[in-house]
Length: 415
Image 1 (cartoon, one colour):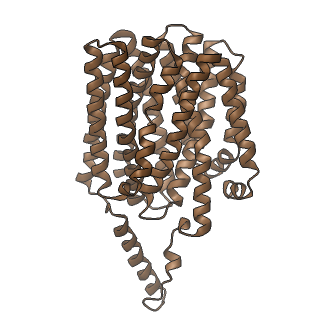
Image 2: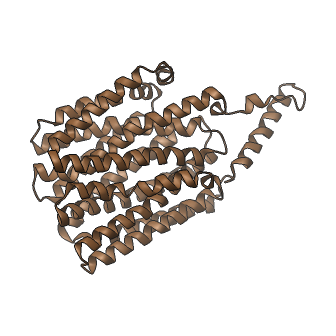
Image 3: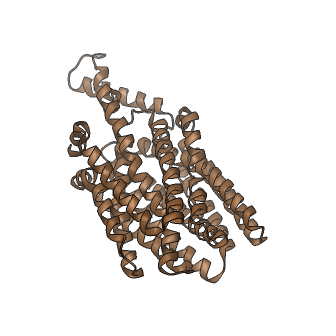
């Protein structure tokens, strides 16, 4: 039951996030006509989280993971309500852009804490063997929630207006708080990593006694998680590094979609929503595919290069229908790599330090997301969407080639 509550919580939150993001991006482009500002507004969703992740990384392992999930989502409820009120009052366009950036900044910290708390909750409730399928399913249903949210945003933008998008997002965030509260009724695992460590030590001692080993002879090395070794830390650092290109590329895609949609079908919010749905749909399959161990190896080895090639195919295309299919494929390959790196980080992090490792990872990729988002906007503004796609394609192919030269990475990716 806990698994389904967490999955439902993630899905509902994803619907809310997608509704709000589509409304923010399209409204920014509609109010200013600037692709650069679209990238800047999107970047504010990550930069403050980068600072918080580094400065407060140890705090992400303290307290109750369930309580943290609840509190951070209440912050999301408040931000959405403020945006709904501001748009309904028809404030000055630049005042709205300022509020958009402020809201994105607050949400960046809240969502960073939310992701770290969710990672802790998963490690506390599921063993290492069962964790990858659960995390893969959560990722998949989260993307499904994004599809639903993007489609809902398109309908709301077309028929009732932007303010209703933000109001709907606030209601959905509140619903996700109620869902996570259900975990308390079913009971939850200890939220202190040290308590979990102690339980494992006691269990391991019991196993040794059953096997005939003298009491107290259990080696601490056998209790140490894989990432506690020097080699494990090096591998984890490499995983964190490899996470940056795909996470950044995914936000580059997100920031570029409003301008690309407007380039193909000028002035159509529903088409932008449809293009966003196509990107999310590609991610759904990615979340399912990554659950298979053999596919994880393929993704880790080849996903970045495949993404680059697909972006090159997008360059000469002017068909809205073909564009939607190609965007879905690009999203599929990039998202598969992102999910694979999330699973690797969670599994390699030492017990009791999952929150801080996820915070550090999310801070690193958050900085990349901000840089990539701003870059997408400025390149599209200065040179057009064709140049923007070409730059992303060349970057992904180059990065894939560089990582392929690392023997340590090849061993890990093939393991």
